[in-house]
Image (cartoon, rainbow, N blue to C red; front, side, top):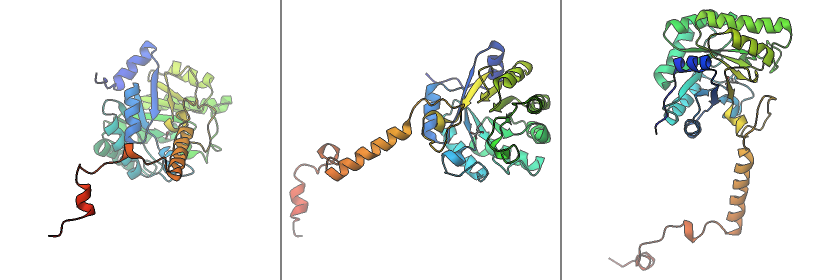
Length: 283
Ligand code: KIV
């Protein structure tokens, strides 16, 4: 049976009914297919693809063109899932007009359902401009990797009352501007829980505790594919790095010993043809 695609009003209803939302990143066609088959509510084509797919040290080098290509692949793999494009560094930092143009590219070229961008109070004019273009907007606050230099690295935010107040101000500003949903990253559950109760829009967590309306994880962390480091908030559900490396080791061993390839994995000539090419008739 074809999965029913959930839209933003469904997520509002889920919040009202206390039903938790499930969200994962994906960057390619097969992973998007797996997410849809598993029954995921939403997929984020995160700029984390910079680290998880391209091997960059962070997300800063990621370009709009890279994001669009990966969104297209994910859209094809998960046609019945709510897909969110992540606006990369530099795609909304110069002007409202630039932000709208780039947000529109995600919809026109890749067919995503919404865009996500990092920041609260300081980017409200960008959020409003994108909303005015009729695009569904998801805010991302707390630990915002694109500005990690300013916030002291990849560190949890909102651990002191002063810092918590800033996160709360960002959350309120996003809701007031008309933002449809909010993602909070690496913030204590006490703060994220307070925000979740206060806000009418769905509040999703990545490392922000169980009281939020749903959870997001980076697929490469969840399946054990990204091995450089694992944040505290990650729960690893599989170890595909080990599975893949072991499969490749077995293959190397089989090739070296001659166990691969074998008769079972070969095409044979049609009966009677062998003699003809070994001893071709003279014309
Ligand atoms: O790019 C991404 O995957 C993200 C998550 C870290 C929230 O923005």
